[in-house]
Length: 111
Image (cartoon, rainbow, N blue to C red; front, top):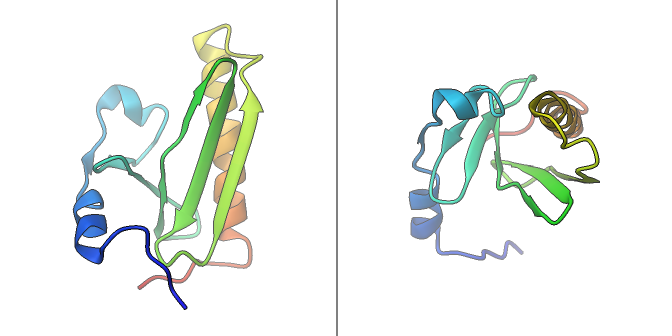
């Protein structure tokens, strides 16, 4: 049984995306932003949906394939958040983990 948090029409609106700014492209290469959701490309093809965040010394990145068949979450302290370079390295490492988890076993299913 498939349970939905939102009616399909509302989720479709959230998934209407625009490209992120040039500055944000540094964190989310190829990223697109909708209403509270980020769409990011996968190295194995296709895309995933995310809404990352953090507060008070931690950051959480997540991703779910379009069909909901695969998901991954990475949560970590921001101990290395002292310089822009360290922030970028930490973001890239976490993004690579999400990509690896979602691409494990080949290309994710798409609708």
